[in-house]
Image (cartoon, rainbow, N blue to C red):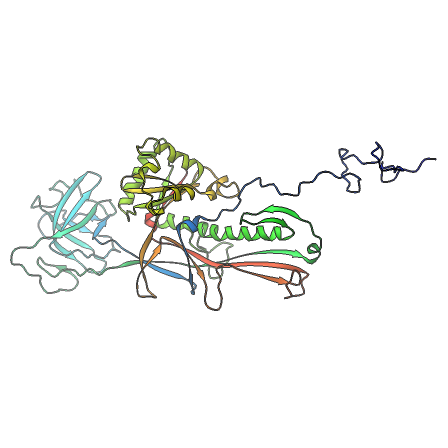
Length: 492
């Protein structure tokens, strides 16, 4: 008498022994955990993407400071010397010859005084003329000057500076380099607005500044697990990016939510834009947006398009020449994607001294070892030191690493050190890193990085919800000071 087969093809035997008919095969497409022999299971999680976190950029180049308002406002110095560009030349000025009248743009205040000496530069022809200002109309919105070249007693046309009157907007430049008075001359009494005569009163130039502002955004995230799933324990051995390791249960997902949120805190500061309104967007008063690093550089900084190894040195020297016209910060950091970093390597291969051999590493206390431990390599070009490193955010396939081509972000040049700004609250000049994060905080509430539990599971007893909710919140914005010293590298 034979027994009816039990559990499919499993036929019990009278003794504990391995027989062809008393176990289930795992290769027949039906993986049933009721089988007698289970497969070998790896309980450790495989880290196939390495360290997946992207934050760290702002920690390298900036700082975090609290604020209590809905807006942060800072002021930046303007140029010290007087210069104008893009004006019209033509017409009869004060009777000394044709085409010696300069008409500034309507929205430009004229602060040039009579008896000032100026240089006129015409980049289209390469001509220049040094002139004496014989008349200056300082009426608001008038913006006219009468000038006479020192090389000729007639107007600019006959002096060879131009062949015909120059229209407004032409890239002709004027700057004041001094003044010239006759012996025994005195400066006359102030005549107010209007054309000032020779030896007349000088225009008092009041220093001005440019004011910028940014608004913080509220960044939130949440992880939810219901009470039933919390009671079904399943352990997985993990090693997390924040340095912890061991066996995790449902908190594995909570840990990754926290890591993702911390990355978002930095990514939002890099990618943020203002809410321009219109369309389907909510009102700007509800979701104002914020000015991130990329937006600030494109608006107020420098953009280098199509940096390649083939023309790398010439293009890079052009960047240096432009930096000379700006703040000329001696030490700068380059955060690059893989291709641009390789282009820099190819460029540096042709430069004597190359990397660390020609750099002082002053930013890292002159310690080459410290710089290399942080992933930086240095080189010097002209009077500038540069510290180059890869920026994982631009290489990761889940972020900008998957975007290569036209208008893609390929790197950024960030000046090192601090800048001096006027703090209207303190009433004094203060020094701040060029890049720094401001977060909302007061004695009552610190919103730099908040997390709290809600629900009725996992130790939280705040509602009737049969789940545990882990909430994350931060309110912050990025301050990009002196953006004219930053360079954004973009693809063609």
